[in-house]
Length: 256
Length: 292
Image (cartoon, rainbow over all chains, first blue to last red; front, side):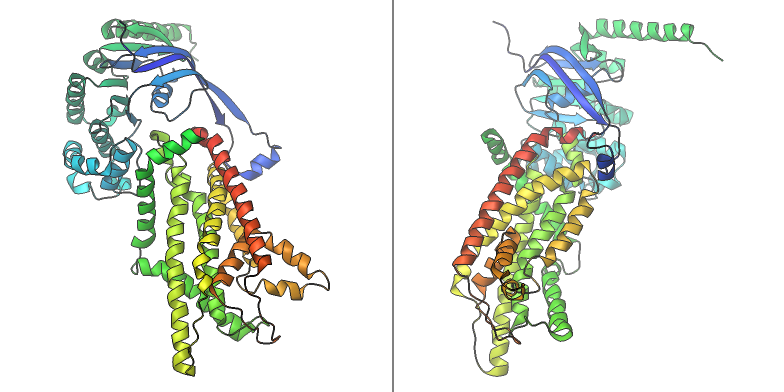
């Protein structure tokens, strides 16, 4: 019997309409109700199955649709067409920090995010200590988020994401802002979650992280899967291609 | 739609947190805290009463004029403050919208709910004021008039209707401001104009008498088709008794069948606005996070 995938994308497409104007009514009226927008085709028929307990790394160049896919998994966007099934609670950590409100204190943000991620307030209260400990933010915990550095916001975001009951952890390049020591701590935590059978989906441009943490790597290009398989093999192919392309561009470019 | 409602119910704890957060911001960042925001309608009424009674002395002035002004100011402040707040609510939580999932309706709903609680508290202050006024009358004139009518128990009807209207409108406004920054200024100007078109500084009944000959009842009907005017009039007439205007000796009529009909029409209009607002928001909510 085949295992049931925890995330399944079938012919997944996502288009964005990017506004090329400022948000003023004047511009809207002057253009006769038609505003200049540009269509961006971020995902073009993605087919993907991810199984429970897998630790999947997404690699690929900027604009290949990695972050869009993660946002779709986190239910921030809705697919333009195709289907995406996600069976389980997702804890997203997208870009810098989780969804923080800069006027709220660290504590209030933890409460808000905990409830958003499906915990009750009681459960958030029970986990508060371990979250503060993990984030190493003791003296700043009751200061508003706007006083935090990006590293501090990341630490708090990661601490919340790994302290929920979520089945799927989604991490988008976020770890890059942490210092070495904190990154180590995060990877140790991710290993722990892997052992606990959680599914992990992350984007990274750090190939050593990919080969170390992932059990499977997916190379995305132009909104599709280019290569899917064992991390070392995928990374090797990806790097060879990137190197090749750079070579190509250098030899063909003219310097004036 | 049913699915969406179930989703909101599932996240009700988050809704409560947003409301608490809203009230905390409103009351915490000031020395007087809670009292300050309740003092706001009081001060506004004090200034209005002073200007109207001693500077302008309008024909509409009556005994206990301030009570009538206060009575109309409370629902008006709910309406205008909630709409102004709704211009900012999605923007304030935009970071959360872009990074996490929860039913987006919760944000404008929490904004209205916070203002509704405040509306309730202001109404309580209104009753304290009315009681104080009658005690004051008793001490100074030796005659005790209890101003509050027994129909006061019916005020949840206009309050609920006004809430429907405000919720529907804020669903539109909150989304529009996300796309066009100037919506905020348009709402602000609109409210300033509307302020003169609802019976806060005068009695709606004066419309009938002041209108050109023969046009009175038509004009009054037109005026009262505005749901805000209908709700404010009902709120006022359900709480306070008819009163005699000083110069003309005319008595403002009590809540009559015409006013009940206008209240029903206002509730009907508001329900339409409410349904349209929810529908509008529902169609747009998945694109909120994509606002370039």
